[in-house]
Image (cartoon, rainbow, N blue to C red):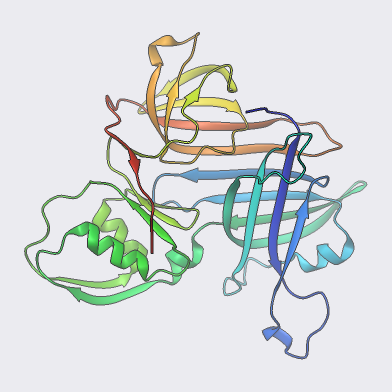
Length: 307
């Protein structure tokens, strides 16, 4: 994959630009911002119950767009979507479909002037509605396997479109279960904290399991930067921006400077940081945390099932 000609598209739901007779009930509209605008961003995604987060800085938007993109931290009831796609586009093809690397809701936005630039800052989280607003009150029959229970809970969560559930569960409970409380917290309890929301999919993976890989090798030819570092139970790896990587995926690490760490790992977490601009130069990197110490990736094809 070539790693030049960076491009991005940010789609964000905003209030209508014109006053509507419906007032605060006025339907939102989708605003699309894209290259050649300048964006600076940081996106953090992990394989645990921690919700994925993102922050964006957009430079020199029009006054109308700056006024539309505003939200106070004290307005949590307003849930409007934001989707960020980024990657590398061939020079000969301006219609290339960019990978979606964040899909959530924005929780705060404001614009400030810094010298000659207007900077619009946006904070966002993934799975806010799914995790915070879902509630379950029901009973399940004795002997029902936990995978079925988890799938049933996920199907009731707003914004969850599919599941990827591996084989991490023990013997099904022999007594009936009463499920009462926040749905995401119930799933967290049943999976022992091994669940996460990735792009609208509830992912539950056990040790040695992974999602079907898209990028299978990380080395100097594919963008590996520097020497991988071991940090307790993780391998810390930095690469040129790689938008196709996702948490839970299996990758092959190959380093010529630290060959003792070469092998297959599961991506536990990743952070995309940098700048995409047609007018300003800047770094654009992906930092990976790979699970260290798993001797075998025994299942690299846990499928995604639609709900």
